[in-house]
Image (cartoon, rainbow, N blue to C red; front, side, top):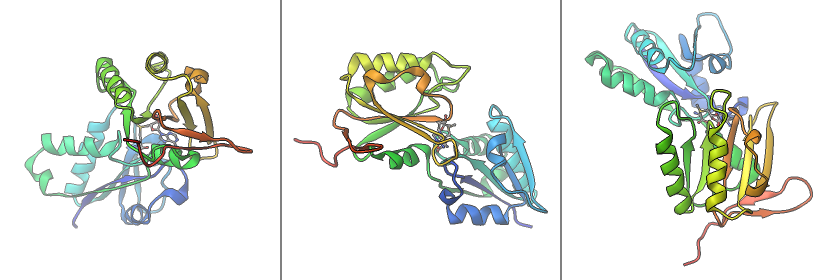
Length: 250
Ligand SMILES: C[S@@+](CC[C@H](N)C(=O)[O-])C[C@H]1O[C@@H](n2cnc3c(N)ncnc32)[C@H](O)[C@@H]1O
């Protein structure tokens, strides 16, 4: 039997945001590998083995998937959102690069998903409609000094920004430092969107100005979008629209 590894993005949460090609791969799989809450999003069925693991064992999980594919299994490694955005696709390729030569000959494919920042942006309007960047605020896999430098340069370049992993119980203080830095460098009316659990039953969207933003408005289920200096709010009854114009004046 010919095995394969598909590294698939399950999107931000809603069933309807899983792409048809990801659904087809899940239907053909013999094994699902991933972080516990993501594996639980896959419906169990006869003949499908679910391998749940903790989120700190990405490389072990990747090696396990590759080894099963070499043995002829059809393995889907699941991530939330897109698998190439702060997720498992890089971990699998890191394992391939460091692993036995035979893994390089395996059928390995990456299937994209809708990443959190795009799902959140769509809920608010078009805040990422001009140039933007995405920064992971977790210092688990990089030093805080790197985050600080990238933030300062992104602010200076006037990008809109998407912050992943903004705040967790293990990292309660970093996001407050990010807000302090934004306050030092940006006008108090800079637009900020806190988008929590987008496309799930717990979805919550808060649109505010930098002067109103508080660290507690973010947690690990939140993606934070910070507008550029050009990002605008269109007030109306109910939730406003947020957008960043398509052009920057010369
Ligand atoms: C390890 S990263 C994984 C990102 C994922 N691969 C993606 O493309 O969305 C986890 C972070 O993604 C963001 N996130 C994931 N799903 C989300 C959702 N439904 N709503 C808001 N943010 C989400 C949060 O910032 C969370 O801390």
